[in-house]
Image 1 (cartoon, rainbow, N blue to C red):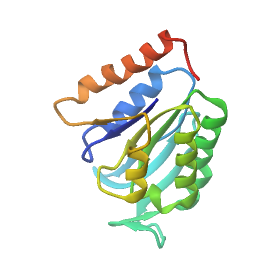
Image 2 (cartoon, one colour; image 1 turned 180 degrees about the vertical axis):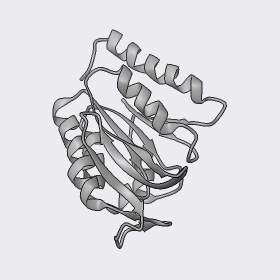
Image 3 (spheres, rainbow, N blue to C red; image 1 turned 180 degrees about the horizontal axis):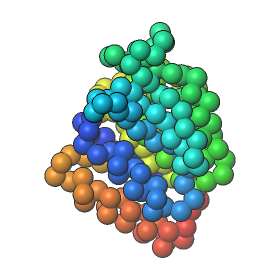
Image 4 (cartoon, rainbow, N blue to C red; image 1 turned 90 degrees about the vertical axis):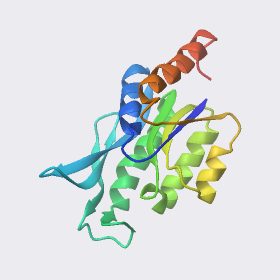
Length: 176
């Protein structure tokens, strides 16, 4: 089962991913969090489910890869984020990816491991940017993908809906 969660920035996608990661047994991967200083967002960090941390992007970070005011750190994305996904594909039942977005898509290694996760037969839960992109459209159109669009009205309900899908699956005979 591949579940993609989309929606506008700040609607709660990462919060949902973190809650699902705590609930679901045998999950691996990573999520992202804002870095704030004096109440202002200055960057993003990568946190793996097994406790590793790295810098994804930051204001003033020297990089040719930029999203708005943020320089993107492909080194940490690949060394920490991609490695966490590879490990999850090899060792876990569920692969968690937060997020498949503009910053992450600068990395060919990230794109490759995401495709590997989608084709692995493992369950995948990922947040994905809403906008059009050939790579993202290919992922969204893969067989068996379920897409949830999160908004302020349904964000509290989505946790229960997705958790129920996993409970139903485990009651039908478990993982692949």
